[in-house]
Structures are given as C-alpha cells and as structure tokens.
Length: 414
Image 1 (cartoon, rainbow, N blue to C red):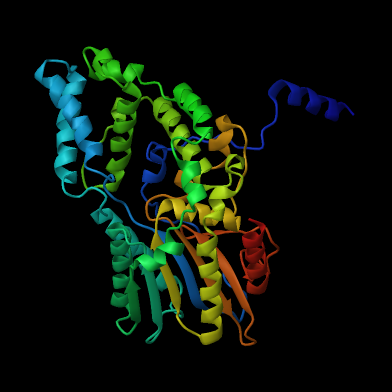
Image 2 (cartoon, rainbow, N blue to C red):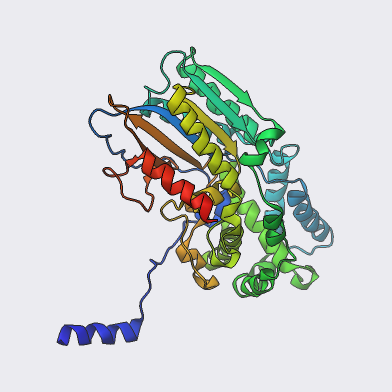
C-alpha cells in the first residue's frame, strides 16, 4: 500500500510520458538531410534450414546538393548586397566568404546526387551482396526501377553497378520510365491538396513554427542592422538548410557555429512536424498520406508473389524519394514508423524523420525458404532489423503468408 502511495505521489509530481526524451546530434537536426549512417546492428541468424532467395527493396536517393540554385543564390545575394554597404558584422563577413565557397561547389549541381551519395549506394549494395550471396549467385536476374528524377536514376545505376562488379554474370535490367511513377512516387490529388500551403491545418502549424523558430539572436550576430532583413524567419531557415547539407557534400566547411543548439532543435521540430503530418501516421491527416503508398505496397506484394512462383527475379530494386518511403513504412506499420500523436509539441518524441529517412534510406524485405518450400521474411530499415505488429516465427522472422495477409488488410483498411 505504501509503495503504491509513493508511486501515485511521484506520478502527480512528475507526470508520466510514454516517450523518451531525445537529443539529436547536430547532423541529425538536419532532418531529411541527415547523411546515411553506416549500420552497426548485428544480424539475427535465420532459422536452421532456411536460405535467402529474393529481396524486395525501396531506396531513397543518396546524399545530394540542395534542390534548386535559388536556395543558394538568394542567400548569397543578401550577404553580397549588405557587404557593399558595410552592413555585415565580422561574423557576417566570414559567413559570406563561406557561402561563396558553398555556391561555387553547388553551381550547376543543384538537386544532383553528390559523390557521397554515390558511395552510399555502392556501399549499401556491397553489404546486400555480402550478406545475401545466395540471392545474387550465377546469372540471377535483378529488376531495377527508378523514379524519373535523375538523382534516383543515378542512385539505381551506382547500386546495380556495384552488384555487377561483385558478380559480372548477373543480368540487371534498369528502367526509369514515367509509367513506374504511378507506384514509385505516387501522391493522390487529395494528398496534394492536404499538403498544400493553403490546407486548413497549416494555420495551427504556422503558430507552432512561430514558437519554435526564433531568428533574433542569429540575425543580430550577422547583420549590423538586423531589421533590414525583411523575413528573418526565412533567412534563418535558409542558413539552417545550408548548414544541414554540408554533411552531404565534399567541403570541409561548417555553419553550425552560427547556431545555438536550441535554435537548431527548434527548427528541426517544425520540419519534423511537417514531415510527420504530410507523410506518416499523424492523426491530423486521417490516414490520407499513408494511403498514397497503397500502389507501392501492392507492387511489392504482387512482385514478391511472382518471384516466389517463378523463381525470378532474384531482387526487385526500387529507387525513389523520402516522402514515399515514409508513407510506405507508415502504411505497413513498421515499428517506430506509424506512431500516432495529436499534440504537435510531442510530434518529435513520437516520430523522428532523421531516424527513418536519412539520405540513402532503404527498406529491404529479405525472403527465405527451406526444403519444404516454406517462405519466411525479415524486414530491414536502413539495414537494421525491424518488426511488424504481428507474431513472428522467431525473432525478426515472419511467415510470409501472415505478412501478406496483414499487409493486404492494411490496404483494405485505408
């Protein structure tokens, strides 16, 4: 009785949270610009008698430069203009020099995959080959499909090129046609409308942004007269994204010294919230955004069934974008990817974009069978074993029949 009383008092004093407080690294506060971390988890051995024979995959493109020239030039032009009229502080002058180095590196490359992005996909492919050599033996057929985005098509090329280097006998087919966009990168008209800047939920979100993005200190550190910056929030965000993208390029340069940690954390919270609402299982979207992944999940299920029945291809490789991977994982209810939270101030505790979809993020579904032709599967998110909310055969291994039934139910449910 006394123990229960003490617990009740502590509950009243300190409250109770289902979430663990998190402290992202500087690089992780870069949200979806977080560069792919090398996996460290140890694989769980398959049950005795089972051998891998097929892999179904969806991968985000690798590290890239920012998506448009204007994201660099608009910032550079402000610093150049103020430099001409002695409007920069000593720190501002130094930042201007750094920005010119960044722009010189990015000029003509906006939206393109960087050399780091190339290495990421080559390394992921190499580990896939090393971990599942039975899948890629002999003249096995690998079917690769990509978004029409050049950075995705190049990611596919780098990935499959590495597989061919490791086994030149592989037959690899690569395609990046518009016809595949209906499942690799599909967003419904309703999803487009919900994600737009005019959507009703954006009003509350803008209030949330105003509470978490505080540009005053940063502007005063860079500009002699900070009030000359018409939109300090936008300037702070522009510098935030440039700072975040430095981990994806080949420059020995950083902008993290401009920010206090809490400033980066505050901006990340708003970016993470937007990604959560527009792509995951946030109650605010009513399941609309995960529903956009139904065509992709159907393709995964149908392709897997065909591979099981025909014995080919050995792998279906798909290359696309972060938003579509996030929606797929939420629809599939992969552990940690489909959490639901109503309170915007707690979104970052329920769901973290950098953990799920860094640059080069990937989902791998590895299929195994035994002599009795019983098929089991395991799921890897960013090359780390993850679970589904159904009973496993053992550890992270699930009956394919049970998985298929569960995923088909998710399609019907939405």
